[in-house]
Length: 109
Image 1 (cartoon, rainbow, N blue to C red):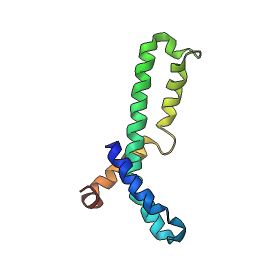
Image 2: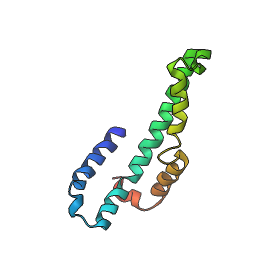
Image 3: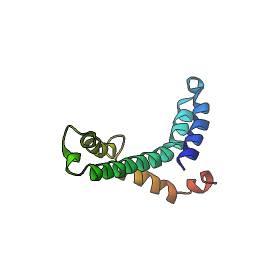
């Protein structure tokens, strides 16, 4: 799914190369068309890294919380990934709003 989404973003990126000549409304429409894909990738990526870091701390055991080990920093940083660039809860609302709207039928084919 990520590979397909990145491919779709590449197609849109080619369209964005002429942004200087596009009117602002067309530019905004292009950006909105990839908002859902970006939300999906952001939620999936941050949840996956949270899972991986949690397993890393599990492997390190008690040392996973000691500052000298890399698992501690990864564990600390993984939490912030679910917050910045839009919280996962907000991104989930964007995704479900898109799926429930009629636009999904047109672009999901």
